Length: 218
Image 1 (cartoon, rainbow, N blue to C red):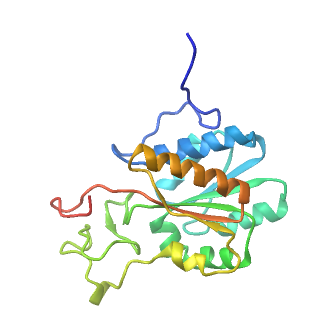
Image 2 (tube, rainbow, N blue to C red):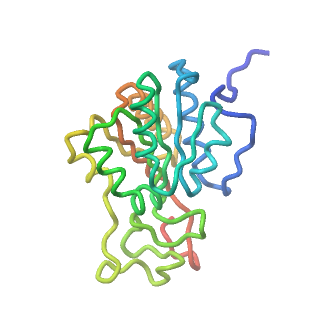
Image 3 (spheres, rainbow, N blue to C red):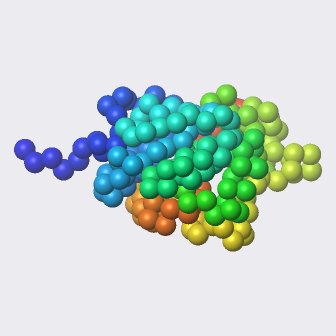
């Protein structure tokens, strides 16, 4: 029987352990497919920081390094500068990149470091139970904003893509979704371009589950 669908070689055989409905697994697969199609697995190095992203080292079958919370861009910069022939990417959530890691991502982008950043934005802190993140939408209910995010007291959600796009060091930036097949196809095209361009910042927009009595963003 002819195989028409199989697991990418750049993924391990370990089953994903993410929460039901989470799109991290889809993002992992797309990245792995692109790495396979380009034939760059042997020289690809991924950096995963604290948060749900940290599990990436279990699932990607390439060289992976864990970084301190928010510091993945700094670690990736060091790797790329010391091993310029390597293909380096970071895999970061919004609670990491858009919060404790804001300084690292802004200055890495501004310097135009030759790396790819995969930014998974689900608008909450997912691993720790769904607390409000810098990207949480106005009115969105979370464990720490039970009445919805109030811009008067909690500020506005950070528009990371727009902020980084204003920096001259960024070559390519794209916002994509993983909520339906058509968008998944677009996301893979963006990842392909990201790995071709390399000097890249690629925010994902991942639909999330509801929190606090079902009044969160669906």
